[in-house]
Image 1 (cartoon, rainbow, N blue to C red):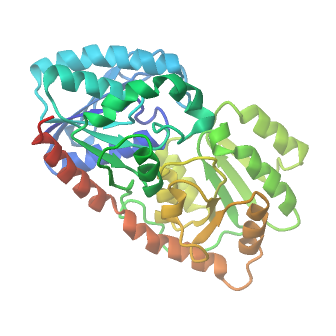
Image 2: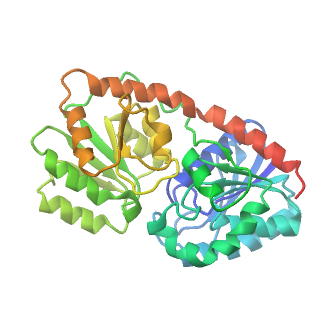
Image 3: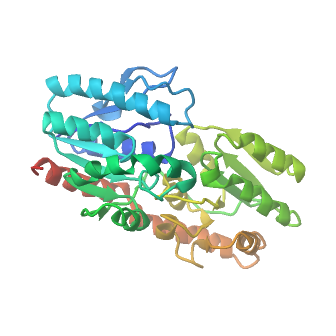
Length: 378
């Protein structure tokens, strides 16, 4: 198949959703499919390049200034410039199907190209692009864009959601058939080797430092655990970085918490390899790719009981799903004060759980969904 992949974020721009899009594209390319990606440009990146497997990437102007931040204006700019680039491209290169990640904003682009060029599309929803999925981030937008999103879902040949939570939430707003296809990881590439607990145990967070990810809760929790041994690394950057640094200073935790800033995907994995516990008190999540990566690298999970995290944790076996903020301290204290080998046991259970998210299986599911989409008529 010829597949046009549309995603407004692609590494090194954006978060986990873009990483998912690239992983799926690379997996499909290995299976012999021809793929072209249209994504957002960021200063310093080439406007066109060829990735491994011969995947062609076209980066269109988007007014984006930061890898970790996208605003309404940058999304709109991507849609406009992506539309003209897509129109030119599909006039010469005739894809069999479009695979679009994120109903908003990228779905607008897929819908327009599909209507004009008569190309069916598969929509993958990641949660933040669903009304109510990330209210602290997109709630104000959906108040007035929601009516315009209905055709995007209605006219898709097929729709996939990355988690059961995203699936159920989408069904409340869009009466369409939705298949759950989890985010996946390459378990051969992400091999932690022999699992051992660090000394001292290392807690890690990976994501944007923004309200949705709730990073200030991490500092508040760790401030109550200063009587026991641990280190913490907060990977990422974002609008709350200054507040996070201030909170660390207020609790005199500068020597125990490290902030490396925005790091590359390989650097995230390198840090995971040296860590023991993924601590993510997020307020909303689809199926975070860092969560699946953490499973593969054998990290115990202390995460909020929301969204796709529910799909990643077998409670009391490889981690804890937390409902109340005070319970973060209890869960971490239990693992960090471990005298029975429970932390190592949790880590091994996470690696076993990761088998459910094998990228090979995920790519096979998308390949079938794309083939079904390409043969459909809307």
